[in-house]
Amino acid sequence: MAGFFNALSACGVLLLIMSLGYLMGKLGWMTAQEKKFVSQYIINIAVPCNCIAGLLNNLDRDSLVQAAMLVLAGMGSVIVSLLASALLALPLRLPRERWGVFVAMAGFSNTLFIGIPVCTQLFGEECLPQVMLYYLAHSLILQSVGILLVERAGAAGSRKQSPSGFLRDMLCKPPIVGIFSAVIMLALGLRLPAPLMRVAEYVSDSVTPLALIYCGFIIYEIGLKNLRLMPGHGVMLVFRLVAAPAICMGFCALFGVTGLARNVFVVESALPVVSQVTVMAGAYGADEQYAASGACLSIFGSFITLPLLMLIL
Image 1: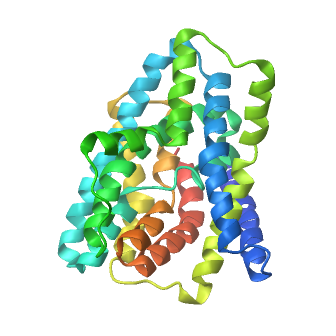
Image 2 (image 1 turned 60 degrees about the horizontal axis):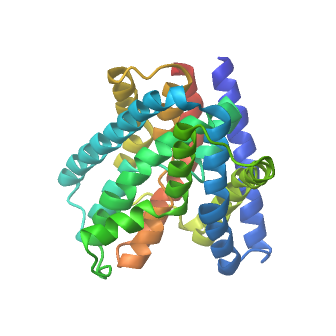
């Protein structure tokens, strides 16, 4: 029961910080321009610093082999979740502009904007290496298959790109670069100079509050009165918040992932819809309102399912 009440307390804290983002939008202190700045800062600066500080402070060279197994377990669970959500979408007979959005919402979780705050609240700062490894596994699939799914659902295609260019863009994203940089330093037994390490740690501390404020502003933008269940949302919510963590739990057992790593992976897989699905839906001409409503409903739903999940872990 301690985990249940801890999760309830953590969800309360997260909800209060998210309400600051909603309030800032209501008061006009935060607009689309500030939202863009916060998003760019988090993704391009704060999260890479978070990756480097978290991995270098909590892993060593001997743990890299185990880290590789964790990444494989994470990738396996995400791939199977995507395949299962695609099968679920078939009998729903969703229109083209919603089919790929549904599969992406059901298959991908919010590993950064929600994942880092939730996991650090539940497990403490020592969980950051496991969070980053799950993020790596998850992001490799999201930035490839996820984009293709939403693009196929949209009316506006993305720019044509060669496979090598697509792979280069995916691997050059700042968070991925941060993870690989930290892994290389660990493998070579290197450390950042103390002043740079302190800078990375200070900047890393800004991820959690800003990510939650960002999510709160997203809810304000959509409007609480516009949140409603559309066809397929109910199935998506059950899969995203209940079935996906069960699949991840199975892969953890298969790959021998136990302890803190298992708990972090299962919680990460049980999180709300990744916010990038909404962004991609708008960019490619898919049903953006469908994606946005599903993402916000999953946030509120996770505040119910996460405490219950902690009773099992």
